[in-house]
View 1 (spheres, rainbow, N blue to C red):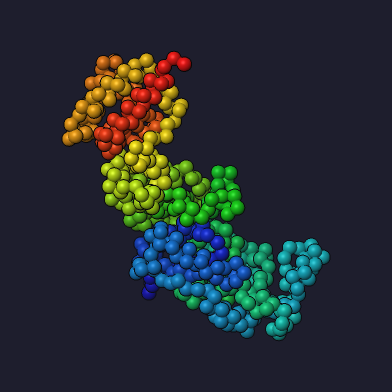
View 2: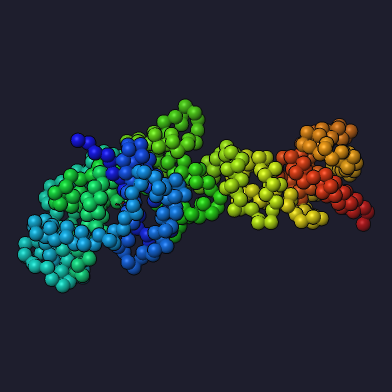
Length: 477
Ligand code: GLU
């Protein structure tokens, strides 16, 4: 009988949620959902010195942000490792009673001294046959059997570990508390986990864990170790060196969908990518197509520039309503939302991040009569041609003369086209001056759309101000 697979995501709440963790979670989520299985969230909170409750909430919030909802029918948990300490100790007891584990009274220092003396690394199995009873300060060690351990890995194929290279590792510390390896395996067994999909950095633990599964009389799970994420220098992403917190990207205006899509393409290429020349796919397709067997073996470069390029695509393709909802938190509270909604469709394709939006359109939200801050370099450049003053004064006259209902993008454009013919210049050149005059800078949203939103009175006022300024510039000293 084949049972539905049970995946798990088992973060330790010891810091902000790492983008690599998010990718592991997504892999497990995609597989659990596609295969009609379960995604178990287990918070591995046994390291009391480093755990903090707020990190646990941070994990749940981060998962929700990337679409892993505690309300989904495939979601189970959160379970807390700290609540299973009893089961961990009982399993250790069983291993001791069956002879699969034994007590050792050497201190850490003594283990090191022996290793030095014997010229070996690690623990030499000193207490294997000493028949020690449990006692204060005595650690429980696993008796690693002779032979080889073959880890069947969905990403890497069979990985062969020579057991002679694995020391008799500690299961219970001298104070009786369980070690991570034991707790992790016992929880996986208790939670009936069938598939362990996690980062490659855990691979060295896997033969030990597989031996524990077997010694506890269980069929080991299917394993999969996904290559780690690296930075530009090909170094493993680290908290100290790199920006790794998922929430810092969220706070920077990266959309959840873009982040999810990008994370899924690290080390894996969606099948239709080549045919479509794009790696942008909705979650439904990523989930349907993701296969561990197709994950590459080499470390994946977490390229922030590429993430931003994905984000740009996502912002551009978003429904306007959704964009307005997402960008709202980035806008100053006193900005007129209706006015922003009018310009929004015209700036969406220019944004790399949501947070870029205010800086692009702030000239539309100045309190009445406030002049835009002028970028002098752009101003000097735009006012250099000798036709500048003429063009400006003609444009003012034409724009002032329009009826209110004519104040529309197409009329505004046609009007400037008439004016620029008089000066025999092209639209690109002709636009530069009114753009700087009205917005204060050389780049921004499409000009005529912006002028329509700004309105006739304020546009004309700013153009007049620019004309005065230009006259002053031109006046002999
Ligand atoms: N708590 C471990 C970690 O966060 C989980 C390891 C595992 O997935 O087995 O690295």
